[in-house]
Image (tube, rainbow, N blue to C red; front, side, top):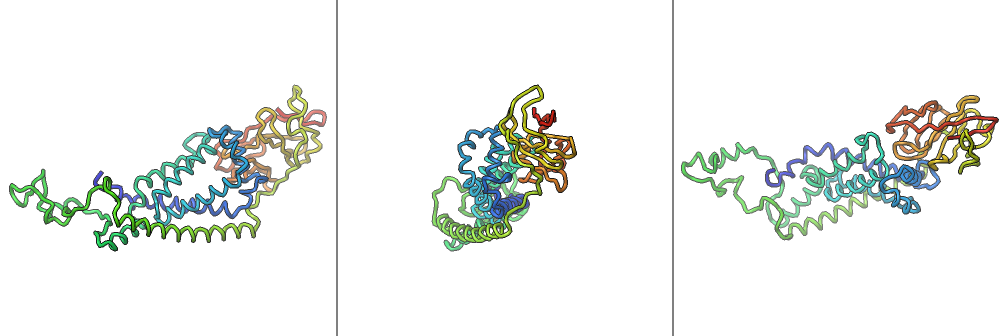
Length: 375
């Protein structure tokens, strides 16, 4: 790698930076505009997602169990962090710090939610983690960023050279500075090439910034960066408050129309028999309706549906994508996930619309003598 070679990567990384900025800003503001996300009683909220992660045995499920009571606060921390990371990437402001935050958040979401994604490479959180790693190494690369503007202004105020990096083909250096080859100048026989007199090589600026103590330029850059961060935080606060206000005004994201028939009284499992665990009378569940229960073995939420007279189907109601609790939507006769929009076939539980990669886990439901049994 040439000296300060990481600064030459800015243009190549610009598309990824724009994508990350838009994605994280959108994700954070979308959460803020949806009151259901912070509502512990909502099946599409952060509380339900944490319960799903615990039941799916996330690697950090024990930690999530202790943090469950603070789900609302955790939801706000995630939303605010996403907005802050998005702003940092969009403005190229304290880019490395924003990228470190993005790596921490992506890794946390991977361990909590998408660790069980199958196959493993379908986990978007893992991809985000490594995308942010590039920006930890390169920063914004001096391209369309406030970081580079602040560095240039601090250097000019201190009457020092402009730190902006540009690419100069080595052939130009050879032609201008005596055709350097094997340590000697072809233009001047028997002379070693010297930086003196060569506009590309002459100067006292160090090739690498490491090993030197902070100077006035660095301190000035920190001050200017802090002011820029404060201004960006103020703008982000205004936009966030506006998103929250709009979300409250319209009532938040609406879940699909559900035909829920309630919850079977035996949510902890009724009497067991060769047919399975008794749920309750089949007459309690009308045609075209659904009801919830607790799966006796796993203690996961379950969903039982009567799509047509005398036909009953049941599934483990945890969405295999992120652990949210699915619902039956009578309007289009599909099972839907209120968190990320996955849809499943009522008859088989198979995936109709992603991002879920696998279908719901089917359960055996039997109607015998007017009673429903599950196993």
